[in-house]
Image (tube, rainbow, N blue to C red):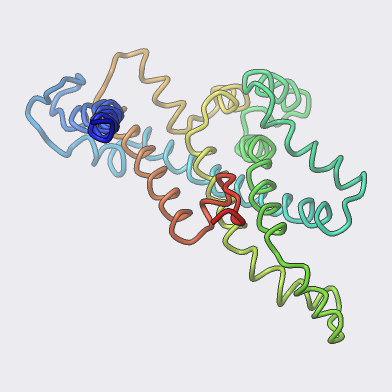
Length: 266
């Protein structure tokens, strides 16, 4: 009886999660300019607008992709030496750098966004794409830092001792032992930062200063004119991006360890 109740509860949870997704996906098929459910005059025209014909949405999508990829790459490149220094030497400087990278992610986004807005305004970069990229890199740097640190901690130091015994330099050991074993964790951190940047709204709202719009900002701007089916297409893109990214992490990365599982208890 308890097993049946558990299955019913899981089915209810699945229905609770999937129901709004189904509504949004169906609403994107409306032929008119009003978001209705069930859709009227079903068509794929709204998808064509979002990806091809409407320059407002296509430019927003291009900016979102550019900012997400560039900021995730910068965050990963900065996180690598920080995580490696913390793992290899564990000095006060490395701890300070790691804490500095983690702090923006711990702050309320609106506080961090307001601070960045003042920073870029004083520097003259407010409303520029580089400001958006650097803002997201700072905001999400804690993610690759965490995943890379987990990957480094999973390395058996006996391998490094064996390499040193055989005459390998620290650079050689890094290239042949450390780097290959941490590639899945590095990619996981990159993809985590990418998907959060792609979906982020609050910080971008402050640093873009209405000079440009990402998909999230364009959805917010479109709300002033009512709910339109093209907004639902943007929501579908967010859902598919998140599913694809986390599926890749689950397939090629060590998802249980990233989620905090203790491998010694397997």
